[in-house]
Length: 205
Length: 358
Image 1 (cartoon, each protein chain N blue to C red):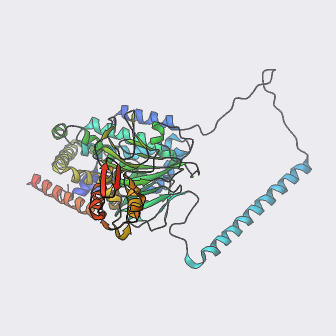
Image 2: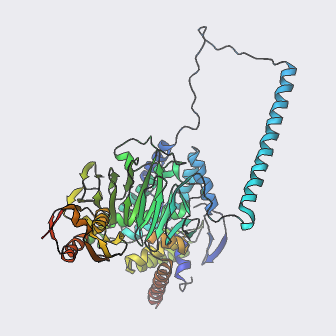
Image 3: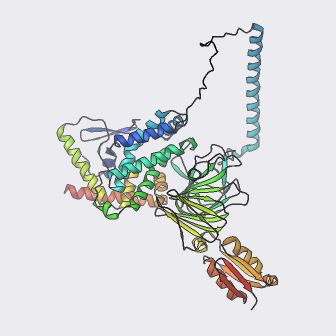
């Protein structure tokens, strides 16, 4: 993910640069692509594809299906991009689209298939780092716990949490992506975070 | 590590990189879609083979004249721009900038409150009269209406999500028509297009229109005037109250006539279904009350809001006065209620209703 280095936090040995993909920057990249500059599209893709894939995996529980969803979303984005207005909220568009695409795929396949799948939505620490072996093992354990906890959430809660934390959507954007009122999106997100906290506390004990 | 803050922890990890083959396929598609920025036409070479370089030397007097003329044009353009700006400012007076300026690229207008537009990071409430532009993404907090510049109107059910675009007339027919590239500015002979992500819409297209298309799980192309589309659970349902509507999915197209309904699941061919279009579109109707009104007036309203067509024999019966209140009943229920209310013989045969004296 492209770094605009808004702030950084430290967890254990990792210093993580929190990135904030600025909307105006997205718009300039979209404009570049509309002018025929492939680099504009490549940067949008690099910026959002891993987070979109994380959301799709979280919703589908299946890496291959999630990659299909990602491909569908970008195929549509490419097709529509020449006519998208200059002030399009690219991030909201892409994450709403990946949510819709995932929901479509989820509904068309057998529920049993989804239930048997895992939810390895989170793959690696976000920042550049060079952790020692112990710290890496610790981070990997934490990542597994997080993935397990996510898997135990309801579908609605899991997609809400992933769209917000991985996609970086605002609550208004989240509400649009989920097709619910803003208040519902906030409540659902808070409820999911509370459940995750309880699960992680329980793991710790 | 701080386990007490799941939000922080979740943000500390990221998703996997897409597989190389996925990235490759997407990049190929992106590259393919780029139109060449500059079209270079092949130069015709002179018969002698290599092209001869030709230099033109302009007389100094001509050059001076050209520079003066250019400078004068620029000055005039700047002055005209400032004048127009002043005029524009005067027109808007002290009111400040209008929140939703009407611009030439407006493709539709909001007709009732309840719509929200995703703009930047926010969902902005749209007031009545606000213009909509190509690609606007909308969601309805309450049932709301919009009207396109060709006079087509769309009633949007609560919680429906959609995007509106205006399609250039050059769009080829067939499947491309249902998944169009939106136009940058609305050509008067273009047509409206709605991309329906979820929920229900009810569309009225005026006579003499250039067409109207809807894309959802299935693509809907309209040759008719009044129809409803619902996108739910990956399935598109189309209900036709008047005119003809073609529904296209998985390479198969079916035609729906007045009073018919069709349905298509994502990736499946469409099929005609035994769904009552009047019942399916009842949500879009306004509650209506007739008090001591001629039955002819009631039948006219029914014909506008249902797939029923009425014949009255003799015609003088149209003057019989009735009381009727319609909330969210199906049109069949309304017609049945009418038969009781008017004290006449009402024979229903599919969409055709014959009213005769007892």
